[in-house]
Length: 410
Image 1 (tube, rainbow, N blue to C red):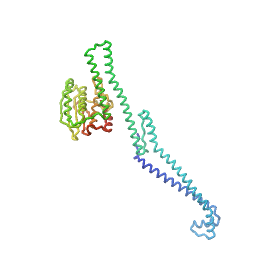
Image 2: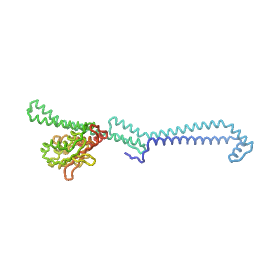
Image 3: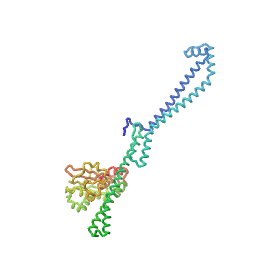
């Protein structure tokens, strides 16, 4: 996009300048035309004067006093030409006035088309956007007014956002279909085999099928959570709670899972009070613990911390000694179904929606999700929560935009 060479001028100021210039140009052209025609008439009159009257006219132009008879003859001759000359002068004012107005109108139309050309480009681009072509952009011109330049910038940003949303929606649909197809295929094949008598209807097979159903339920619940976040209905019941107690409760309930992953848990839970939706906070912490069990079990160590910052915001941290995050996290962030280990399947790597859900919950509480690699090895994921907002208060559009921009991790 070409950058403006000069600061853009407001449309109102530019319009006033153009109108003023056109008016001055019209008056100036009329004056010059009438003045030229008056000089032409004067020359014609002097050429038709009788010799004696011409001598008197020449003496008057030289500031000399002619004799009485010559002056009288000059006055009589000029009086006879007064009415037709006045009519010619009036007609010249009309003709030159209309001509200058027409010329200024043509110049004004040319300038107006130059000013509105970006709007025509915007209209054509909007038609392309309407037809579903989200790749359309409008090139900004250094001649554009401030309002038009702002409109072009906003349109291009909107088109970029729509193109990104379309790509993300297409990928999400493909990813959801992929996530659901495998367990559904297993369920359908196993049930059909049992009906056909190929597989016996025993508890082991039914237990395996139940695990597939639970996996489907997790995918559906995660997608529902993200949909609620986009609809600004994720956090509906905020109460004053001690976040450290919530984390302690989640760790206790997840003890069998942590022990199965052979993770030794350390805690540094300081009392931290905040207005929050307790079930959502527990859901976010549980998602981080599940991620740690999947990806950081080889480290054998996990630490959970809570801290109250100087601005009264709350931080819930989960640290591990696993392989950490890949170095190209920014490139991966556009994939909502990304898994920490690309070699893992859905069965071992989860739905790929865990961190997206945690991010959505953090944003719904006015905070954000922070993730980084620890210098001593492993990863650190922190949920930042703020005390802003009232319990049950809908989140604003800015919060929804923040979710759209930031909630791109799995």
